[in-house]
Length: 106
Image (cartoon, rainbow, N blue to C red; front, side):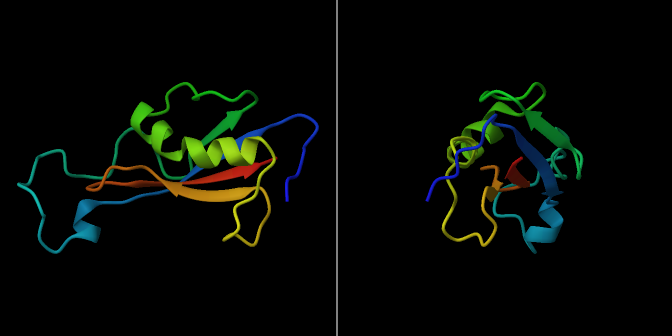
């Protein structure tokens, strides 16, 4: 089922930046000095969207990964595996230091 909001607005919240030390007991690749939580974001950081496009300051790689869910929520869709309507939780594709985002239709 599709909800059709009058004026589309979304909020993307950085739920958590994961530290490789919290994910791996032993790194699957050679350790690098930048293996730490992603420094492009801060936990709790919010991005407000009033048009469908990558927010200023957003990582292009993360945007590419979460965009399918952003687009679905933006156009009034709902994901079947979330109880709440107009909500998605997505993760960027950085396997060593992923960032988890919550996408909400307002």
